[in-house]
Length: 303
Image (cartoon, rainbow, N blue to C red; front, top):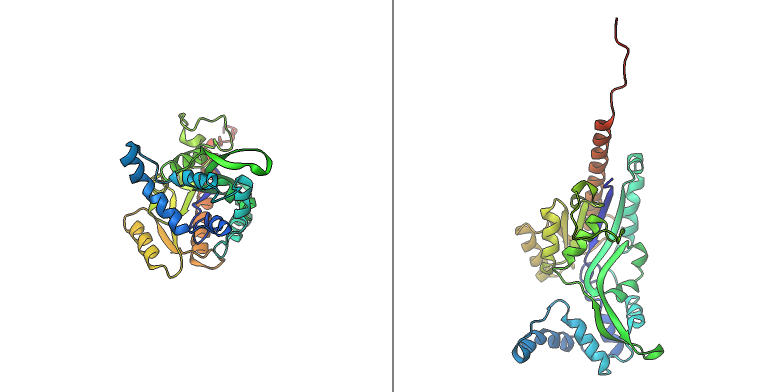
């Protein structure tokens, strides 16, 4: 039974107003503008010097490792990254919206009858340990993000290699893993054939929430397969507003609102309303499916 509604969130500028790495720069007194300017220059640099292309979404991880090995981020390891997560400030309504939207399924007996439930996922090009160190992690059903390998022993352990990456294109793979349920059942090959009716989360029961153009691949996959897409922008940020308006005009998203998830806000009401709409459709479809399998009760023939 495809009775799961998945709300899938980007992280930076979607749940927090800024970047998850900001506390690292504050901790080590490193200028973030300089750091990110250096990251932007790496693509042209490596192409000119070595004729090598880089992944613009994840090359920043190499620069974090370089800074760590050079002593600019002394002692930066996965445990330290988790500490950084605890320092992040989330938009209003986070994490309450996770708990409240899951609780929506207790409003009617039909949702319990058909075992409809809401799950929340984060799919980010950021660092998994930082996300895992945030207070919202207890409300999240799964995280796709970048993992870093350490070297050294004890207190001398530092990040040294890239283990796993998610970029803005491979976010779509995470969507298919949620769709087919391979995140719950690892034995399922996400690249294997699977009938639509056997998939754990139908795309039409997905809501993808992000902040801008970098999430166009994920927006496109969800929307083209019948799901819902929603963008947010920080209050008063005209540049961000224009970006999400262009996304709406181009058909990438259904709608957008200010980044405030408090109960009663436009974002909260739209997300909640969409969840309830999806839940009602799931119940109706299951009801119809069951009715089609019921055979007529045999009757006595009139003589």
